[in-house]
Amino acid sequence: MSDSGDFQLDAFAVDVRALLSTTVASLYSHLITRPTGRAVRMAIESQIEEIPGPAISMVDFSSVAVLDYSCADEVVAKLLLGLRDGGSVRSDVYVYFRGLQSFHREPIEAVLERHALYAVVEADSGGAELMGPVSEPVGSLWTAVEEAGQVPGPRLEGWLRGRGLRSADLERLVASRSLFRHPFRGDIYALSELSGLLAARPEDSSGSQDSPEPNGRDHTS
Amino acid sequence: MKVLEVPSSLDYRGIEELMAKAVTVEPDKLLLDGRHTRFVDPAGMIGLLGVGRFLQSRGAERVRLQMDPASEVSGYLARMGFYQAASGIFEVDAPPERARGRSSDVLLEITPIAENQDVHALVEHVQERAGSILSRTLHYPPSAVVQFSVILSEVCQNILEHAGAPGWVAAQTYQWSRRLGRQVLVIAVGDLGRGFRGSLESEHAGRFGARWSDSTALEAAFIHGLTRFPDQGRGQGIQQIRKQVRRWGGVIAVRSGSARIADTSEWEEFPPLEDGLADFPGAWITILLPEADPEGGK
Image (tube, rainbow over the protein chains, first blue to last red):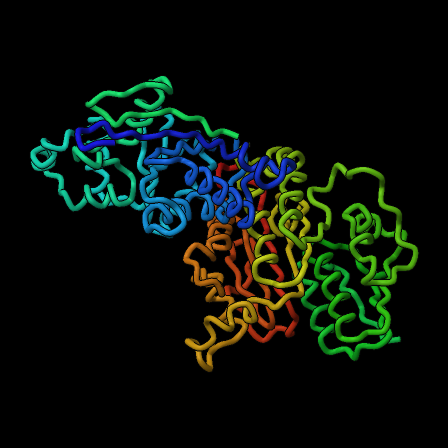
């Protein structure tokens, strides 16, 4: 890592259903009850702790058939709270939720609303979506970055001004880990852009000076 | 031996009568006479178990339950696993044998809930048959089976998180010809734990002062989502259950201590809040879900 921009970002995939089987009990196939959710979240957090540097965690719900509110609170809300407020989870990790089906959305929306949290999720269309109690200006800013993919740091101020967007809203999105800011250059990345970059690169890639150097890892159990 | 007559209709309304008798009777040698009982629903069955356990806890030396062995009710209780659950609570004269294997017409037999894994087992178990009952009998969309599972999970966790005592759950569908002219799914969950007032008391009684009661505790939990936990994420389960029950045009009622609170409907008019009921311990939740309106309602 140096200040010239060759910053390295790791990626790791978490299959929630597989984690449920290995950490809680192989007999359980549903993400229900608070103790189960707590165990799954702690397993995700311990995987995060094993990553040496900054990382994006792609948490996949596609094999989860039932998700209740208690589990959504433990797995989604408490994980995001830990990232936003510090505490048990490192602050240099971002979470991108994937594989959400319609029946996952309601419990997740409810817990995000309750805790005033945002979550970046893969949309059905393949792009990303910001879930949670998002105000219009914050949503517009997030969508603009999502459409752009990335905004270079030196051009950021003008880019915001030209679109009537506020830097305070940008800070809020960065603090909530809904957008990634390159620590040296100040470039802003949509998490979907990062996950796409990471997915496209071989594991031994040396990266380039134009993007965070992504290393794809698969931590699926 | 003292005799308590079991109501002829032992449902979510009839059980109230039995609870009222149970809290006033001198615990002694007791006979619960159910020979004239002609209808029973999950709330009645679970409530009956609760009454038996309550009488035991008050020191009743012996509690006998007598049903008419030739009645349909007795056979139905056997299919719902009542006599198995009642073992250790009631002495039952010659209970009918439970048919081997699962009964195809039963949605969810009486199931004890004492720990986390019981909720997992319950949701796994109910998935197969809930799908067909919800779609064929209640004409709910296929996605309803997930929402139904979530309701069961959350309502059972209420026992584990707040009661501090084991409980039971059961569910079954009935044809409500007179009242509604449609099928209704009845879900009942009950426990003899500390109740809503007991659960919330240490955290919230102070701010209510002299107004603190079973009914204010129920309002705090049911309407405002308060729990005894400082964690902001708690208390959502019951709120989300209420929301889903409303979407399906159903009713949810929670009885605890001497009060009951309910989200009601035009076809089953529970008072929104009742006080002054018999002071019976624990929490008793009844959910009624009607068959989807063929005219394109729920």
